[in-house]
Image (cartoon, rainbow over all chains, first blue to last red; front, side):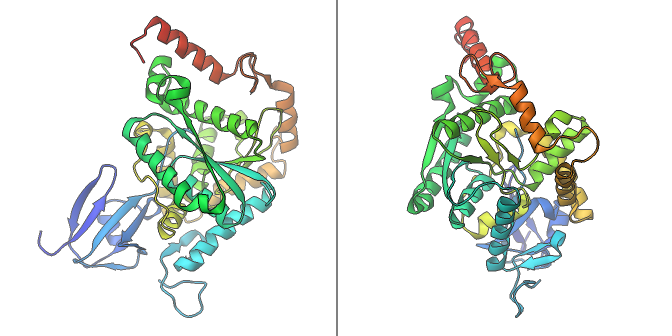
Length: 70
Length: 323
């Protein structure tokens, strides 16, 4: 895909390309991910759900949920 | 989205629908510190004179907790238990060590270490295999035991863990689904040192969601292990958290109402049969006594940790190649 944003995902670690421009909440929806369980990071900054991600962007979508014994 | 605290339209870095708010980096850091300070005060966790031992794993919650306590001026050391889970433990150990050397040491805080492979004779995965127990439950027993032992033996006033709102709400959901009343009684954010040999235990992050703590760690450049523990795959806690997050998305504030509502009911006595903190202490004093092997409090003759270690030792003698 030419001219798409690169999105880095974890669990498992992988990357996908998504056509922009798109709001962060739309990117998450397209990947079937919910806001409450993820952070969207561009460079050193966090992005809010209403921010616009562009084709030139390199994003990390970081899961925030951990499990195990308690 | 603009910061709802700053008067002049500063760009927000995070929106918090459950508080009907959005914050810039500066105001969000302030918000997190306020929530922790409020938890410490309202639940009478500790004072500035107390020595605190933070249980750290290399994950976001425990490293953020250590960071926040040091930022707020508390005397907080940390204990890391190396579980011996191959590359995952190596990486998490590195993260903790780096934080201790680059941030905590400058504030006079130190890191204590416990290596399961050295002390218990095998890593957590091997121990769980030998004992035919789920890995997470074996891990929980060992960590609770070692953290309590270190806190008591080294005279810390209180032991703090990084349990957050999601952890507590998910645990509450699991306990309610199975009507485990005896566990519900111990779900508060402060557990007193009810008997000799028990450290006081507190959860200063209980007012903050997992996402808020992760955001705090990213914004404050706390380098934590993002990878999930390989042993946690398929855990019930993850399922409960997922369900609660779906509810939270539809109805912001669900997790907080669920857990904090439970705490309010507990504090005001609640329905018949519910115990107050004082009666919980009295019950502990009635039912617990020193383990005949190690002296830590237990309701049996031998505590579950010592039973587990004895079984592992005997199994290794019978099947020397299994560990």
